[in-house]
Image 1: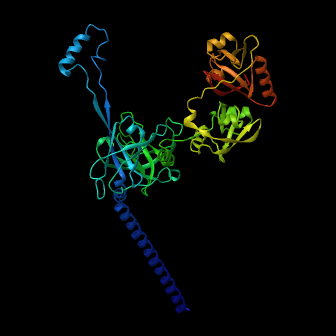
Image 2 (image 1 turned 90 degrees about the vertical axis):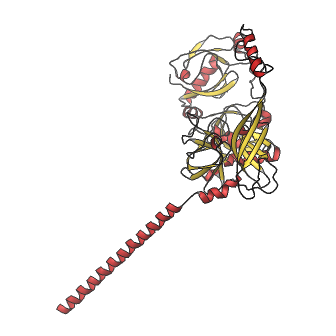
Image 3 (image 1 turned 135 degrees about the vertical axis):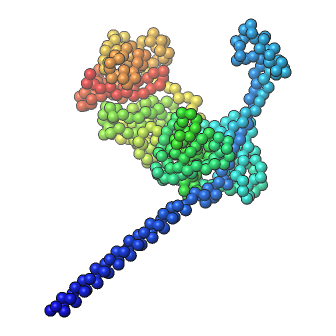
Length: 497
């Protein structure tokens, strides 16, 4: 019995020893793996990627002739008794008394997108330039001297320009990547000619996506990679060496990089460049409506489940009018894509082919309708966006206070005072209670109310009827169409006042 017990004890000790050995081996493997990862991290460098893509990045120098001024202009007022004195001074120092024309130089960046010499940069880099010189990154196969570039086309709305140089052989170039799949936190590289210092590389991450600065077609990538003056027009690369943005602007109190730079997203740039390359100009789709975002109170007033889409505030002459779209319609889908807000709709329409027939789904009269619209061209339509709706004659009626507004039917003297057409019609706002919701939402004396509850109003009785209909329908707000200086917008005012 004792022998048997000793045998069992020995086997148990062997198992414990074996388990310890296995554990030590496992820990050792983890340590070796950690050291390997650390060593790999220490040796990782952006140099190989920078060497691969830098030959396609260029410095751009522009030259502009600035005309001089004659005489002492800007120094003393014209006709001043000191005018002769300053003219004599200029004669002594400037010869003939004229400021001679001089050349002004500016610097920027760009990148080659094809072996035959097409180059992308910012429009503001080459705007008004008389001469454009392109300097290539030094290396094998690169041009030995600066090349003169010509402008193929430019687009002020996205600040993109396309240049072309003639080289003796094929040029190194880079390709665009898909900016839509870039994520906040991804590593990026900015390259260019900051502050005229020559070729420079900076690295950082994508800080934010879908930034809008000032334009209708803005889609900026925000990055903390250092971008300074002179970087404009240079590329923003992902870690695959693909261009996902064009460095365009910085946010800075002193003009230097503080880690907030903006690059126009490549998926916007690609479409612009393709059109500039084919036509020498952009050709954007045009729907022909004025639109505004749908707020929560507007959605409630119109019976929508939630805010969203683009509310049509006016339909001037154009494709939308011909197709039957109406002021008060809310566009909820365009060409099969859900419309989230006005910004998204403007971009989508602009990127759609001119002349294409698209299905537009709108919310109207409590339901949805589909309208087929053939798009026009935005550039052709920008000449005329001001339209007034013809109205009937206004009956005489007393002023009345309603919804924080003092209103009266429009009369001839008010038409003349407000600069309206003789056949303009509606309810004119003569005063606004400064403590009211109407004042908070921007209504002012002189505004003209042409619709209430998406129906025309020409009398105070019409407005009161629309208010009663909204209350009976369980609405808490009434939607008004207000015009100021010919520009329409919708405003929802609470009925519980």
